[in-house]
Length: 115
Image (cartoon, rainbow, N blue to C red):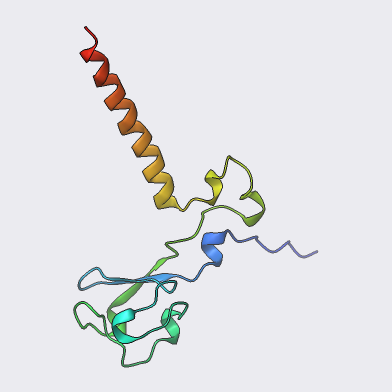
C-alpha cells in the first residue's frame, strides 16, 4: 500500500518570495519589479540571469527564499469557514488580532474618564 500524498496548504502551493540579504528588499512574484519591467506573476527562477536587486544592485545569488508572503495559511477547502477570517494572510490576521487588542486597551483606559 502506498501512503496518500500529503495535501499542501495554500501557502505551500503559492510561489515563494525572495529577500535580498544585502538590503532587505523582497521580490514578490505577485508584484513583479516595475523598475526593470518584470511583469507581475514572474517567478524568481524565471528572472533574467543579469537581473539585479532594484534597491542595492546585488546579484540574484544574494537572495534567499523566504516562502510565500501573500497567501492564506490554510487549506482551500476550509476558506469558507470562520466568518471569512480563513481567507486572511498571516500578516492580515496579525493586524486584526493586535488591532483588536489595542482597541480593547484604549477602551479600558477610556473608562478612567467616566467620573
